Length: 212
Image (tube, rainbow, N blue to C red; front, side, top):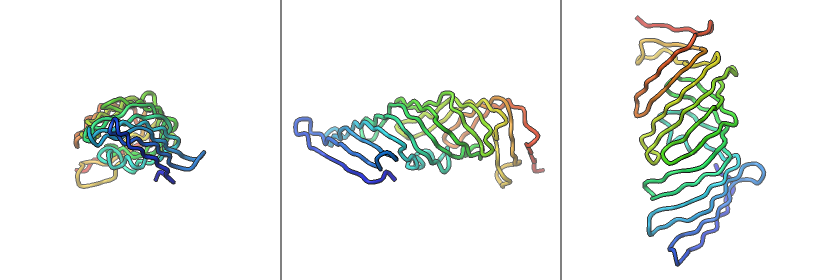
């Protein structure tokens, strides 16, 4: 939800564009400002979005194959541009969010995470994540996409007693585990595939059960 919305639209007869100036949200609580144009003739748009604590739950439909129940808010500036069928992004955002990484079953929190947005990829650099016990890790990496389709991800995590895997018994896996560890983890995936390179020292809280 973006909150109360005020939209001013003008037809530019010279460029044959619809010029937009929109304000959404509640002042001093959460706001989203959108300025730019939509071109019905060229079937394209160019919008500049300025956000302050903007709700990010709308992203769930795009990242549902990687993350689960993503929620939080973002502050920054973003440009959304390109043909309708090949939209892309550029900008800088600061995010506060919580989500579950489906590959590991672990829910993480991010506070004041810096996100650099470039055409085709979203980059995280030295972002601190924490598990439900408050134990932390530092993440570098990002998401790659083809106009928000065919999403792939690669994350490198430097963990400090972090919960790195937490899945219960199910029929698809020969084991189940809850693992806390210190060390380095690299995860690459997308399209239902996953590759992990793990070099950690498990803590005494960890447990692994292999089903014979």
